[in-house]
Image 1 (cartoon, rainbow over the protein chains, first blue to last red):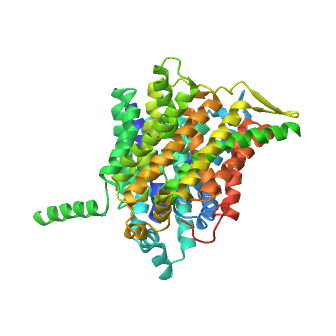
Image 2: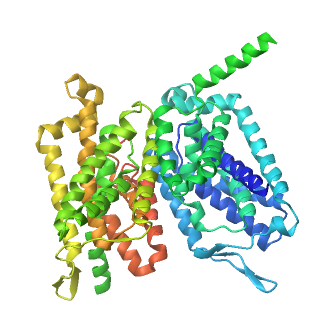
Image 3: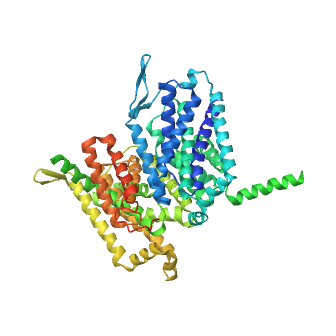
Length: 301
Length: 293
């Protein structure tokens, strides 16, 4: 049973990661730096709980805040470049952060062991959950509380005026600017929110895996983060959740019986998904169709 | 000081392969305004298939493998175009980005599967063991070979772009696809041709990288993709001369940092260089004002 709880934890954390890219994608920007904010959140919160004995909840918020802070820093140069330039710029930023953690040593003597991040070996001994007697089930619930909170928040924001502004910038920057929308504020705030969510995901990830290292925060992780909303479709947050379940639940775990061939099929299925549904699974048209089904059901009842 | 100059020369020579990869990215971007993330992977893939096919012929020389890699690169370029670009609507940038990333993962996995994750020895050319001495400096023969082949390939590309009707059509599509179509240029054909041309370049680059490193493994493709993209940004998206200069710059800087600061910090400084460019010259080395994207 613990295996499934673990899988649900992974799906939760990846949903957060996907949602962090979703918010930024709403403004039409594609950021391949999400793994960097994820890494910052993971390292910061793990250092707080392990080295300085914080409680997990304030550590989570501190990690998310650090993610948001660095995202703001990256957001400002993002104003100078757009589109595919931004993809490359954020990709390089992500690699830079990974290389920073590759070189980052900070260890403290605790009892008779040294704990803390140790360069290429990574950060071991993040034992907050086991030390405090949390079971896998507890951790899963804890992760999903945050997933549901963030999903509800974004779902609500999407229907508010701010969500409309985000989408307006994403659809047509020039038009949005001419009706008086402050592009700088919108883009940087979206980037900040995205960074914060990725930081939060990183904190949760660090604490359930108990061992983080720079390899877990490479370009591939960032690519996954943007892949979820693109595959799932940008019409609704549920598209992202759907894509995470499709990728992590079906492609990664479900195809395990294929052994070595699974990895081959993985790339091929992403290509097929994009060729068959270029705007993602849950695009505006699909959403309307679902809405109509629900409406019909209500009329009959 | 001598070692410093030595490191700089070696780096610049090796940088020509980055320039080739950068040209591939920048040319596709210039013509289609899209990024082909699978480019470096497909290039290494071409080098690998050339190695396997070349190995079937008894006593095959390195030249045969290089020639095969060149041709296969073109074929792979066309395949990438047909699978990842042709079937997806033109206006959908994110979808093609994702599909080429899928292709990148697929090609990497295919190579890993075929080689069982083992690095493969890659043939070096006849110049492999030679050292050219200039005073107290000495230069590896194979790096000079890499440099010479890259220069020839770039020269051929520039001649193709600026001296032939085909090149004219390519540049026309890059500038104004709609107007080019109205003039009777077949845009789809030009797009496909761009992929073949960049693929041919990539095939050479892949073989050169593998022979300079001495082995072929999928560990090469990731860094090569990232370096190629950085070269593209520093040179300015869509600028071929920019990509050439930026490739040499990145190669030189990388090797100097490697010499001064060690291997763990090597890539960090390349990233910093790119950030400096993003902040101070966001349109690249040969920037032409505000017309970005």
